[in-house]
Amino acid sequence: MPQANPQLPQFVSAHQAAQQALKQQLRRQALQRVRQLTNEGRHIEANALWQEEISA
Image (cartoon, rainbow, N blue to C red; front, side, top):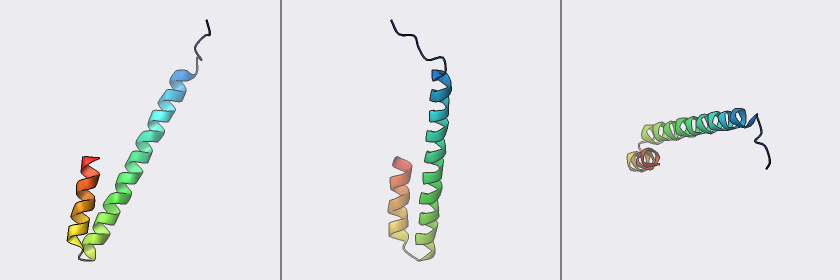
């Protein structure tokens, strides 16, 4: 029976941290795009993007 990699918890933890950082980055980018659309007067598109973002 193979033994578990003793570093596995570290790898899992690092992967989860990287995933969380990526989600936060994508959310910041989406919010930036919503602001840009709003500033351009494209409120319907901004609202649609925001609704998509919060439902994800």
